[in-house]
Image (cartoon, rainbow, N blue to C red; front, side, top):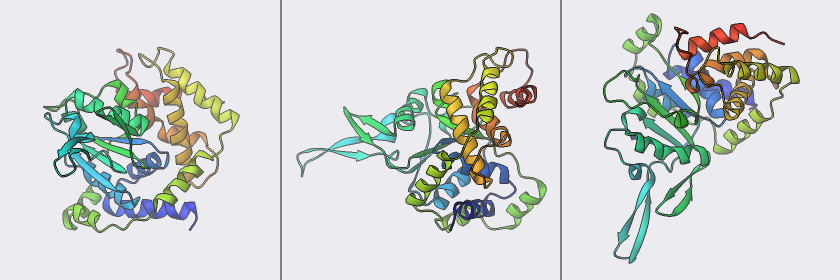
Length: 306
């Protein structure tokens, strides 16, 4: 089975569970194929946790879920050493972060101290516990969900952690036809438990290598640099994108191109992933009157293709 058939199978299976959200599902697949972490932000009850669980099952990855709460401690994520009398020594008991997919559910309900415990894991793919550095499994993805910041009991994620997420998406309410299927059909959580794994870790690694091999022309790179420069102009945002954010944008665009069946990146690929990839890293200028996503789209309209 070639890459296109594998990707189409992934999308088809996910769309049987998350109905009426093909664009969001495709963004999630692109994010994981690009090797990035995913942030899903929306109101409770629209399927954030179900989507995260379905992604891990479909990609064939070991899954661990942590419900973030105000009293969650960093050691609850990374693990602790416990003295065992029989061995007359301390034995490390790994926490839930030692999984191929960590679902950080309602991440912004935990304190900033606990949120920051994920930083090293997300960036370095390792954790330091009690003076020892321990590698995390490969692959390692964080799929985090969060509620809107105006809800009670939430703590805004710091910019340094937001920057570690390749994409931020919002699922939104279903349309009438999709909601009818949800109301009349079986429980989506029960469906997730029966999903077969469609990839092995080796096959996922091969797809990720193909993403990195997608060609980018000089003209396309010029266009991306024009977009990055526009974010730094001061006209649209308070601060512009970092080089790391530009690299993340290229990885996401390459994954989008591979999903579309092409071995080169087109401007449409960049535009398709741009709001999801950069809006959470940017703050609009005060008089814009728009949210970050709307401001990104306005900026794209103003930046001409070469």
